[in-house]
Image (cartoon, rainbow, N blue to C red; front, side, top):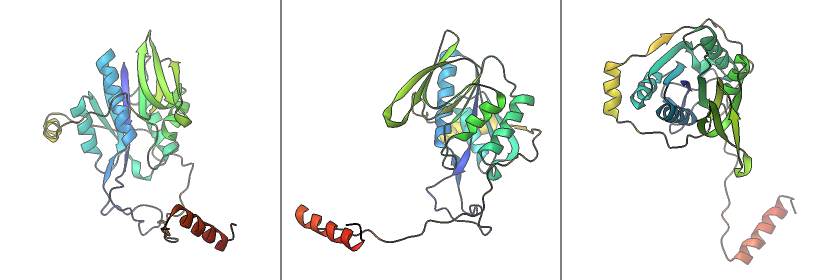
Length: 258
């Protein structure tokens, strides 16, 4: 199989996020970036498929802060090739990023073959609808399934398990080539020691790729970012269940709800 995994860098929400002076972006002075969690699962699922059915795993990412470390880590985990597209990811939405990746697959080193499977995270903290993989599949004219939690191969077809709301799951059969939005791999993402990553940094390389989309079209214009404002504080009610019930009634009555 010809497996491609699209990796996206997102702000690490462990750090406090602040709005930059332009009011339209995040302040990156102290901001740390990490690979999106669903993308880590997409990589793990690709590695599992490679181990079971053979083939190659290529990780692809757009230019972004700290992306090199993520690509080297993917190589240390077992990916065969790492490619970095020179287009800056930090200013692109899902639709624009999909255009860049589409150009990569149409004319770049990622040309589609009958054995190609493209995996991306089903969502990210700035793409909760998981639009990237869906946009890419539509642009490339390939079948797509999202919110995937397991992928197997049998008789030349993919057997894909998809999650639905309410804890439901559905099993689908899909042919190659295809695009999948992965929610979770069948196993947790593997751990790789830092020493192994450093060794890979010395022995392997990240290939740089330019694509023919200088200014991707933007569907959504961001006008302003705001930090959440504190509107009030919680009121803690103490006492017996009967006393608490009376206090709740009093609060609701004061608010005009009762």
